[in-house]
Length: 486
View 1 (spheres, one colour):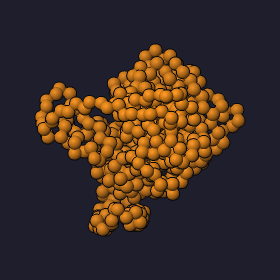
View 2 (spheres, rainbow, N blue to C red; view 1 turned 30 degrees about the vertical axis):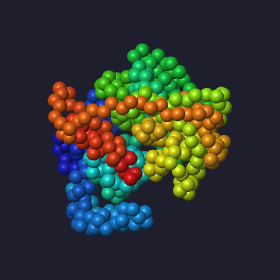
View 3 (cartoon, one colour; view 1 turned 90 degrees about the vertical axis):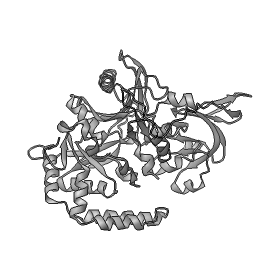
View 4 (tube, rainbow, N blue to C red; view 1 turned 60 degrees about the horizontal axis):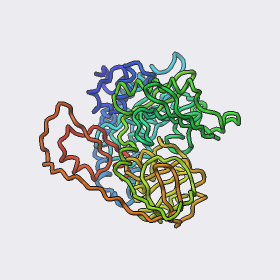
């Protein structure tokens, strides 16, 4: 239990604090207490936001804004959001709250130096998903100074989301990436899958660059395959800024991690998996000879699970010409007309079932994924945001396809294979393989006693009513990004 009113240190957070700090913060704290290499940090609880609003007498004003806005009108929503943000930015921090935040921040720095920190939100409840500003909830990097930290905290509060806020010492990464303690491309539980890029990892998770890929046998730590992807630019820290910088010519085609480094990272991932006894999705960074774990969460969907339930039978008249080749990121095979998305103006033309082709994916494009028959991106890896979302939605996806937005044309009919990463001419007949559905009658709130409590994963709002009928202990993981986008 925290000794302070608003701040929780990583060393004092327990699993029972999930409703106060969110599962993301609980996971980080748990690993830190077990000795995993986690950057130092603390968490600002949602209570801080509640008291901030109350002591600035903003409850009624903000409530009136929320009640009067027509959420179907984009201009009204944007105007209301701006008003909400302006009121938050003008308000003052209560004395006790400000002192607690700055005291915790001071402990992260040296005697005469204020720490550079990364600031990220941690959703704590279903109500948090009501915010319609997912784009504002990205991690803020390389924040330094008391004023900058307080301004960043206000930025997250301006979204209207009831979030806890995680503040951690910044890791100046030489290389970084994402790893799975399962192979997400085929569901192999005996492999560790690692993606790596030069510099900070945000260019990878946002799908802006294609990473190196390493497959490691999880038990023996034997490296099974190494795939190196050239990288022309990287995200670096300079002073108080974060910017892209060209990778030196000698490093552009160089492997991001050495064989010894791959093995060392895989050993840490092996221990994380052993602790949780469930496949984990992990963000990591390497700096000054040490690996750091930045984030860990359970893997909710594997390609094998989806491939088993989403098969398309294809019969050939003649071999198809492969137009493009990338990496399968979400399984399934689909035929459809190509729609090239070069700007937001192109989104108004999208028709249901089309194959959407992007340069890269940004959070504001999430709502259009539900219209897509399949997704292709020029850049990104299987751990990018686009890949994760398409796997959750069951949409075939191929990433890292060089120049797809130039080589494909609007209206062309193609077959997209999310299993092997191929985009081919659609000259074959396709037919959907029908699967028998097993129907089980479950009475609402039917009590079924089990020794182990069963919790559900909830990703889409329309599934909530059906989920409520199931005999479970509640929601264990809420994928809020889909709800926020709507």
